[in-house]
Length: 214
Ligand code: ADP
Ligand code: MG
Figure 1 (cartoon, protein in one colour):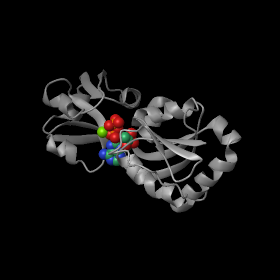
Figure 2 (cartoon, rainbow, N blue to C red):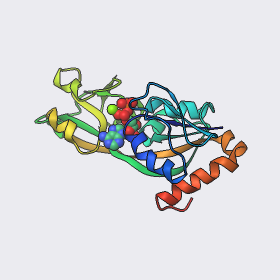
Figure 3 (cartoon, rainbow, N blue to C red):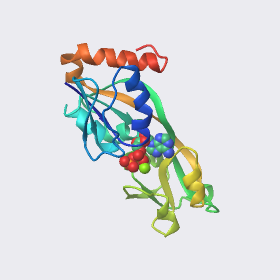
């Protein structure tokens, strides 16, 4: 059995055509089903539906043989025991620093002000501000980071941005780009060796489907 860990939403939606190319069709839609293990048309392949940030953990421990995870999640996770054979170039976005419209971010940085920054991405944020020599107090949140500056919890946020629509709706502007994000195929290293005959063809089909050499 090959177990593939996916998260609902964008990653699931954009992975579906790749699974399809590999002849793997889920028997249920995770958005409407409450099942966490979803069978496929193939007896030897099942999907598990987990939180995006938990995908690398399932793969690391071998509870899933493979998975799809954002570069943001992989950087924060650390990625031990995980092989990353392929950038799928899906779920693209950017990790950015954003502040309320009218907040003089550059000025605050120049003055050496100490900034309160709310984020889910503690490690990425810490490294970014350390590299710039900006003093920050990081406040860990698990979602809806855009709210924090609006209610005085933080001066700035570090969050993923794609269209900028959510920032705009909350009167925030992006002021710094930290890194580009896309989702990668990840594989448990032991599974890659032991189940190579099943896993390698899936990797090869995915890479052909996105127009890449494996
Ligand atoms: P959760 O709500 O479980 O924290 P999301 O569904 O918001 O996770 O995001 C899952 C993954 O999708 C992220 O780790 C990231 O790689 C990607 N992602 C998040 N936001 C965007 C976006 N606005 N555009 C494209 N990809 C995104
Ligand atoms: Mg989200």
